[in-house]
Every structure is written in C-alpha cells, then in structure tokens.
Image (cartoon, rainbow, N blue to C red; front, top):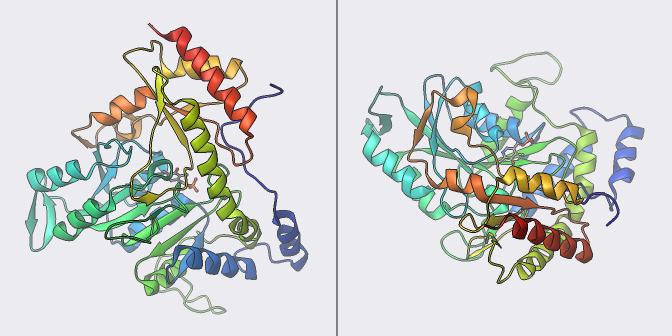
Length: 393
Ligand SMILES: *Cc1c(COP(=O)(O)O)cnc(C)c1O
C-alpha cells in the first residue's frame, strides 16, 4: 500500500471551495453573513427541530447549554468518564463539579448507574436533587452519543424527569443518528433532551474546520443561546448588553464550508454505514477481535468503527497494537483515557466505574474516512489480524 491510511480525514468533494470563495469575495468572513443563517436553516431542517444556533465549536455549544441550564459554581453535573474531555471541561468553566459515571456496553453513559447514584447518594429537597454528602445541588446530565451510537435516551429521560435534571446531549459525534423505533421514533440524537450540541471539527462527519451548533427542545431558548453567543448584544448599533455574553458565534467562512458539507451529509452517512458493514464482514468469525455494534432500534451514522480486542486471547497493550499498525501504514487510535483519571479531575467524584476501565483497555478505532476504498478496508483488516495474531498468547 502506498502511503499511510489515515484514521479520519475530511472529504471536500462538493461545493466547498465555491462557497468559501463566494463568502470571501463578498467580504463576509466574520460572525455575520448569509451562510451562517443558511447553515442553521439546513441543520434545523435535517434534524426536524425548530431552530439551531451555529457556534465556534462543539465545546462552546456545550458550555452555552450549561449556562442556559443554570449550572452555577458549586453545582454538580452528571457526566460520562469514557468520553472526549471536551464534554466535561465546560462543567469546570462554570466552576461546577462533575460526577463521573460508567459506560454500558454501548460505550455511552450507563442509565442504571445514573439512577443508582440519584437514588442512593442523593435526596430530593424542595423538588431539587441534592447530593447527600455536602448538600450540593445536582442540576444536569451530559449524555454523549459515543462514536455516533445512540445513548439509551428512553431510560435517561425517565431518570431526568423523575429527578428534575436538565439533559444536555453531546451529539458532537452523532449528526445523522436517529431512533427508528420506540418512544422517540424519528427523533435525532441531540433533539430529545433539553439541549443538543454538535461539532464540525476536522474529524467529525461534516466539518467547518472548527465549528459547532446548539439546539434546544424549545425553539425560543435557541434564540437566547444565539444571543449569548454574540456577546449578548441587545441592540445592533448602540452596544447595550443585559447579560454576560460570549464570543461563540460561528463565522461566515466556516458556515460556507458547512453549507457545502450539509449537501453531502446524507452521502457521508451512507458511506460510513457501507464501510462499517464491510469491516463487520471482514472480522466476522475472527476469534481475536470483533467489531462493536450499534444500538438496535436506531439508525446510526457509524461515525467511528471500534474493534473490541479479545483480551483473553491477545497480549500487549492497545498502544503496542497502534504502534505496530503505524509501521504497516495503518493509522489507528485507542479510545480516550478515562476523564476521572486525568490530572485536573483526580479529586472529583467517580461513581461505580468498571466497564469504562475494561473498554479503555481493549478498543481500537479503525480508519473510517468517507473516501476510504474497499481495497483499503480489506488491507486494514488484514494488517490488524496479522498484528493481533502475532500478539496472541
Ligand atoms: C469533538 C467532540 C467534542 C468537542 O467538539 P469541538 O468542536 O472540538 O469543540 C465534544 N465532545 C465529544 C464527545 C467530541 O467528540
């Protein structure tokens, strides 16, 4: 194979340069311009939601959601430990405390353990969930739809209703994922809870270079989020501000890229699904590893392809596997280090974490760019098998 097969690279086969050049020639490069509203409209249509506000990043979208949810210094927010750190850092931006919860076998946050935490460690006081040990108020849950899989939203929403918690869906990896059955049939990831955050960073299913978006179940709330994202400007010309705002608005240049990418999104989702199926076939019946599956009853965007290595059979660490594959021209990555073990979070509460530990030791993410060919997928699978066979005990 010529060159290295990358983990994930963006795909600009559509109108990207045309629209970006158009934005440039119009001179609308910053936080005003028609491409921003066009992208917001396209996203809202795609997600079947009233309104979407385009932001600087997925991280800023999550931060805005926490602000809007009323998360304040000293509050607690339930978060997964198995995720990208950007899902959790905004909790600290609000000087609130995360409570780290385990994943289930979908790699998303485990509702059973969220419920146990609320039941056993907290009590309701004046309709507010309060952590017994310290009397802090638990305000919200951040749910991450890991690798494009759908978290168990039916169970999570039930808990949130019972305990009066706001739900912030981190759908940064899950644009295009929706329920096909059940209570939320037809609902897209990010449109079920109170807030949904999306990211258009370079390796996400669509990209604007850097960028993101936020939606809310109440369309009017999105208007307020947009207001907060533009320095909370109450008046277009006179510099009147009634709240503390942020510089979190997407730029028109980014949005021009985004409008082109939205045209291709359905095709990207289809390619991701097709390529996932190929990997799944290639690893079918293989004893040393198997492809992780996605939730039944949901259509998923198959953003990332996780291979679960059989730890009973294969020795070495994931880092060994990654290094050996790199030598063979295949770029792969382990799953994230658990957040509660990261230096800035060592003193925060981690509740019943077991499965996340296991999965962080055995998941290998495989090349998943939308433009990867069938031949390259076969090559990757072949190389992975050779490396794992050599490491087999
Ligand atoms: C990418 C990502 C984010 C952050 O998005 P940015 O646009 O990079 O700020 C947050 N959470 C998860 C799970 C992500 O994968």
